[in-house]
Image 1 (tube, rainbow over the protein chains, first blue to last red):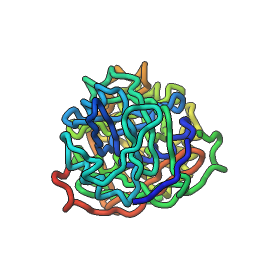
Image 2: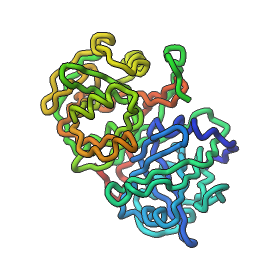
Image 3: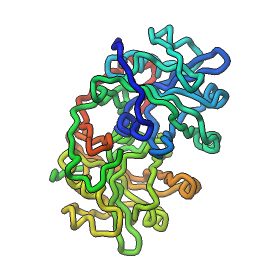
Image 4: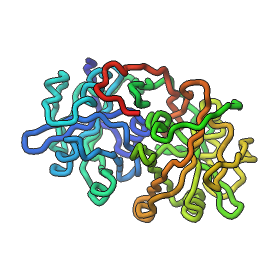
Length: 184
Length: 184
């Protein structure tokens, strides 16, 4: 497991780590219960405020914990956590997944949900819109604090294709010179 | 530009190409006008029906064309189309982007919007929920027909990080044996 040094990261730029579409781990807590779920159904929706939408199936224990606590942490794991991500994805009910998968629950600074120390980035989130939960299982979060590893520059993320297959992130290419306007 | 041989693809499995988070090209048409936009803010929301949500900024011409026509095509470009993707991303207003970027508009089978022949996969979409457009600029599409290249098995996709930098998709790893249940 990597031991990262992390720094606070500008909220308007967190799309750097989410827009590429990694499988994320969502950690949550409510009244002493915690949960972690693996999730690949999410999208950025706004830079400022930094809004991220996550589809969270109502059969997943996380759904209930976030609905009640109105908070969570979006954690971005690297490839070395692949087995833990799969193990977490296999479990939908209540369980101490931190202990079971040897992950460290670290106190967040702005939300009650713990962050996962072994993940490259941690985005502390507050649920800012509940209107899409009943009909769509869609949770709209505002990221209120971001912690990102100081290195490597970009994480080696995993991207689920279904059917047991993951794509691993490849090289980065910089085409800034070709953009008329560069977004964050 | 690649010349792909494509086959019809099971709708419930299209997450294979969208969940990893590629930058997509959305093509649309209304009353003789066409548009293409580059988009990285999308998420799968359901297997069956195959629902995909896309955030489409209201300053983008595509927003208006899809609102009126209630249809579009989600196209998945490979790395070789990177310059076209950037060029399209630079243009938000009306323009003949097919001609300008030397892309082939091919007739779709179930929607009026043309598909982009040079893309690895084309998902013909009908707008099935307009309730989130005004407030969130979020369009919920049902994919009604999927065309996917017969090879390579997985596309070399591009994933935008912002600030002019793209991540290029890397290798695939198969962990099917570790899954309790494998989704599509």
